[in-house]
Amino acid sequence: MAANDMDHAEKTYDGFIASLKWAVPLIAVITLVVVMMIAD
Image (cartoon, rainbow, N blue to C red; front, side):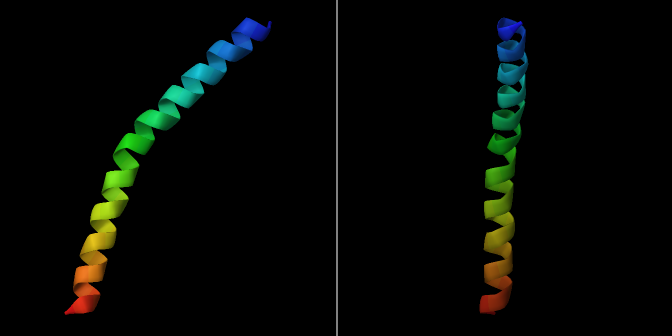
């Protein structure tokens, strides 16, 4: 039972990390655009 829970937890973690790899740069670009618009 515990091994099954661990497999599910690893899949959830892998999905989270995969989405984080895309989300962090995207948020950085959006933030940069907003800062550039405010600076003008």
